[in-house]
Length: 286
Image (cartoon, rainbow, N blue to C red; front, side):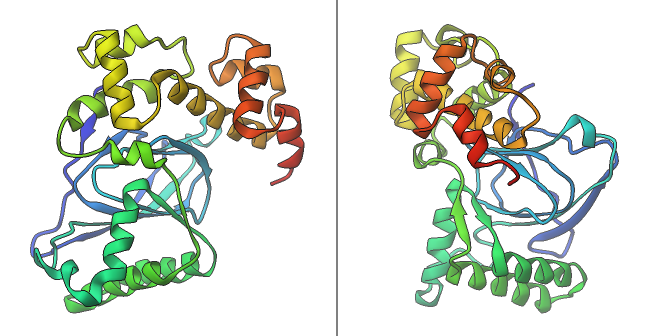
């Protein structure tokens, strides 16, 4: 599967879109990016969410703000694949109110919020509840009412403490206009194959580079070595599996892409400062 630059459909005579979608065979699960900012509310569904190099669980009420050109996807669990999945999504470009609007002094806090969104932001608590209601209102609002609601949402986000960053700063900083096609092709391959025996040689070939040149390129763009990036990605996925409590430690080890239980335990403790068993016990029932 090739990386996809998605063109967001905006209705005629509209400057941004608010779309409610319902799927009966699961979310498409396409690893993609686009030029628009995106605010996604999961109305009804569950599974795994990937934003940049962050992998986490999602369920009903999940609310995420994603900056432009940040790769992301939602994927349902197999047991959820044939159940109803419903999502409400807002897309807008940074110049939908004119090229200089967000440069106004009064927009400083919102401008900082939009800069922060290049890592992806999870919204929780009271802020999530308020914005979910505003998104529903926006579906049915007309004309200037929609714009007022969008600015209200951005203003609430800019002033909220109920926000947490998702992707790492290194990953987010690597996404820019120069070389984005090559890098997103690499991310696409990694996200779809990290549970396998993924090698530097294979990924370098995807980037059409020699392994040595790719190693330098990857570290300059992500601030991590390729090996460390893969290990952290696998451990992050292992954490989510352990929290689900549906697998034992050995099963989680192999499901997350490790081929040796001893190495898995060592790498897990190095990154989380906990053994896999201790981590699972601490998060039991959450």
